Length: 245
Image (cartoon, rainbow, N blue to C red; front, side):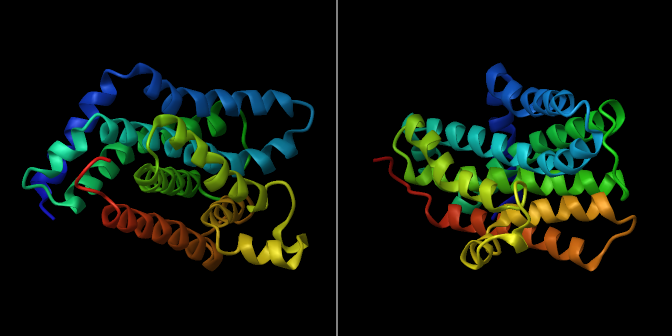
């Protein structure tokens, strides 16, 4: 990999995003609006908002970054941009890293705004450090970016990219422990949830919600989410085709 080429790729992606206000709104504004809506849905039950809000603070960035990244990358595949780039002396790893860096910078802004809004304006009450909450939200957003980059290799159109959402995101959403504790699920479902990265994202948020200090479980959860993001990015580079079909 070449650092200069990675940075150049990231800069190009950011320039394109600057001229795409709808994608920016989906990544930056929509998660904040969803948190506001959730806060007032549970206006009469603030403890419920504290419990669910902390989890969704990690889930919303993952979902939005997955959706935007998969569609944006697929758009470049179908337009032939990726094929032209790969015809240049640009390694697959440089290209994937550049995309991940660009969307990762957006993820930092998204996570910071959503976390600040939840804590400062919506009254989300957590026992642990807000910085740990922000860290997990950022890791979740990066995981969503990695998943979006990966699945875009298997879609032939933007519509197909969206169709991957029920297959990739919804099972994780149902089994992550948001709707029912994982240890109260059927043994088969509990075992499946144990290999899904969103489960560890929710567990990490719950650790910050309940404990004032960094726990071993929090470190484990953070490492699993980060490791899954790195693994998926590696797979994304391996499946990147030099010809658009």
